[in-house]
Length: 115
Image (cartoon, one colour):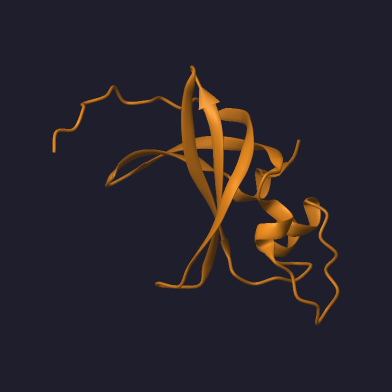
């Protein structure tokens, strides 16, 4: 299989708007819920994830996110993040982070809110 070499996409820091297209779950090394957001940069579709510990309460990051998108957080009730989040338009802040593995654009998890 041949793969096309593409130019690196620069995602500018700051406020962006997009839509939540998926919610993914992972459990290694800890349980996390990833909210998958699609948005456009210079006519190119970009997909980034915002990660939240998989714990829902009024004081948890995931609970606060679900509440911002209209969830009622009654103790003992059950919620499906997919039903609450997928398809919703949102705005969020992106910040470039440099690590030993490279330079990456990251969504600030607490900045994701309905648009």
